[in-house]
Length: 190
Length: 190
Image (tube, rainbow over all chains, first blue to last red; front, side, top):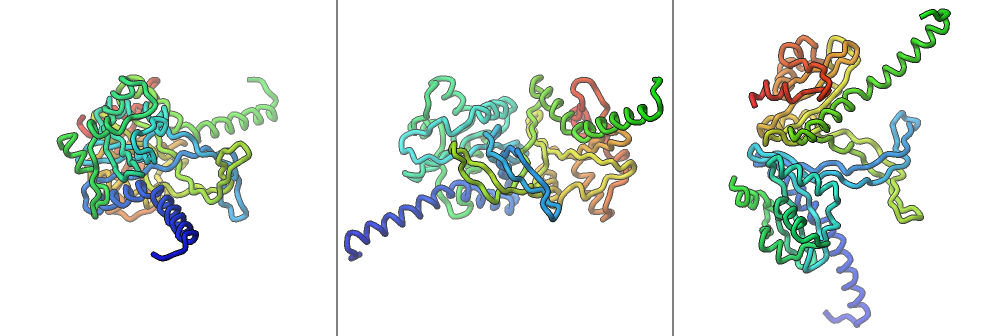
């Protein structure tokens, strides 16, 4: 397009901002749509848990409703999603990173790691969905492989090469947008 | 005890208040302790979900923390507790009522009933734990029996006689305080 340089730059920045904003919502949004599809087709029942919030102050307003006046987001002690699939307990955490080469482990809180250990011990289906937003690739990594990595390497991040080797790439589809249950079938032999 | 009548009455009232307060917390507290026991003994991994809260206004304070300034308790769309037991998805709602003869169905929200239907359809272990606080009796009623009652009677409450016939009384124990998994073993033949 034939814009003077200044204007072009401005336009690019706007697009960049918009893309970035959407991208931040993408994985959660894609998963919600995919889970809705699974429910409608009777394939699985998987849902997002409420965000944990610590309420400090609440009072009744003039209409008799309880209004929370002071509260804080608290560190999650479990994963974001769980449910039931082919009779199995299924549980996962979904995370995005802008990093191109590695997944920073600080994205997963200590309590969530404990949660993953419990699920793996009880033979639940447990995994991470990790999206590298910059290169637009989404992987499924089993909880057991994640825990093994933590045990073995005591590192602060997981290189994408480990995720490519031990995890599975989730291909973009139209419906469902992120067909992670296809990967679950393969990895858990369901 | 030899108190003048006035003082005795006062004492009784204090005890009543304390008992009543404790009683309100009892079921949730008893379940948390029981679930902790199940986890420690490696019997099951069952946990309480966060309370759903709709945030309307949040801002950053001077320390860079996000403070929620206006929020409301939203209607729960799922049950309170879920987890994994003997490889099975397990899911329940716990409710107390002061009523001595029936359980008001308004205690369970429409979205929660939909949730129970989904879990039953996917063959998860799903039930209600209902405590009649006045007579101090706690029952486990299977989700399928609850749904059957709703379908058949379109009533606003479930008489305790139905719960006694189709559900199971959970006996008080020392450890775990509410051994509902004993009843689950029996009813689901695990």
